Length: 91
Image 1 (cartoon, rainbow, N blue to C red):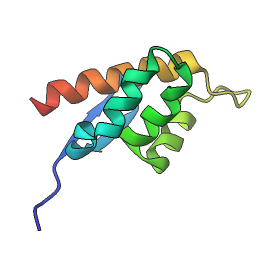
Image 2 (image 1 turned 45 degrees about the horizontal axis):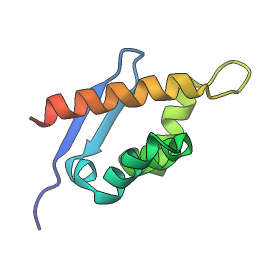
Image 3 (image 1 turned 30 degrees about the vertical axis):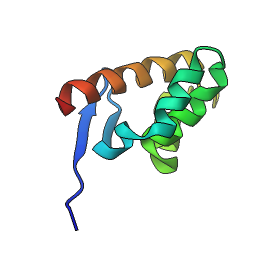
């Protein structure tokens, strides 16, 4: 069985990620990204497909405010950085 390859990095705010490279080549992720422009609610699906359930929760906890809210703007920023870093590290 082939060894899994990962892309690891850290966003400016300190969120550390470790993503299986094959997750970046998932057609369902590509579909969700394509739908994101017309349906902003797809961001939740994009995050789950990219990070998985556990790391999605970890990301939410990372940006959670003292009041317990998860600001969507911060999630969008983190997601953008994760994609940028993943593509740079993958190549």
